[in-house]
Length: 396
Image 1 (cartoon, rainbow, N blue to C red):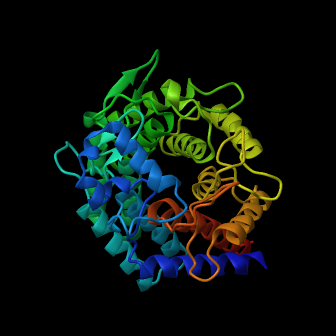
Image 2 (image 1 turned 90 degrees about the vertical axis):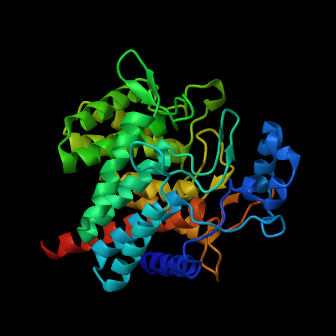
């Protein structure tokens, strides 16, 4: 029976993450190598790119050999925190409460200082084709997930310090990020160091501002959130898809970033009451469901090819459909994807999920943020849906 399979899979994953104390490696943490830091190559953009890709693309985990230590990733901690908050809704027991308190306190401990509000970045230097970001450089993505999870923690514990930190993070988004003005509205930058126009990143900022508005009633939050949503939906194609961003090297359409966009717009509508973007969601959902999943449940990364099959995609699918209120409506697809993912991408004995399957050499390295945190987060929404369905059925 699939429900038993999912519960067993989830608890294997949960046990693995707890045993590792939520600390681990990341696909992009290659520049944390103490060997690389001792070389003059570290000053070269091309060498940094090569070194990161060497670790990211390699099916063999060279991190222990090249002295990359496991670490706490703030975004990963935020995902775990929200997952335990979902579990606490299902079963309000002391075990889950203690995990919520530990993770929320750890997240606040990991914040970056020096900005107008609480904010978070990654625990490694990161070089992309466009930008170099030192470790702990705060980003709208990491900060949005952190702020959202702290609001979840506040809802579970009523501890004011969690809400205070979450609301403070809105100051970072409003004051420290750059803005690219559009015909109407603007796009938030990815970090204070750049002017990148990445649609899902700006929308995640809108999502956080909109939820914060539901606590504070500050009109400035909802005004800025609306301006960002307006600018981003203007970039949606007629078929419902979005490119990743506006730079020529960001011209792809993928699954989980599409999921971020749909989820963020939906959350904006939920907290603002402004339903003027519902049609954008309808077109986007139609494209999402038709282009990122095969008939047998295989989750695709890109809309135009199957490989690589990335663990992030099935995880975000569950979150997106839950946030949009259509997870149960699409339960047949969701359970096909879940079954396929458990059968093909979870270690049968250790419980962790693999990073990527490829048509050549797959990477089965157990990345903590990218794989384990995301699957625990995603599956917690599936389990929460089952609980809500059961509770609703018992009332009728």
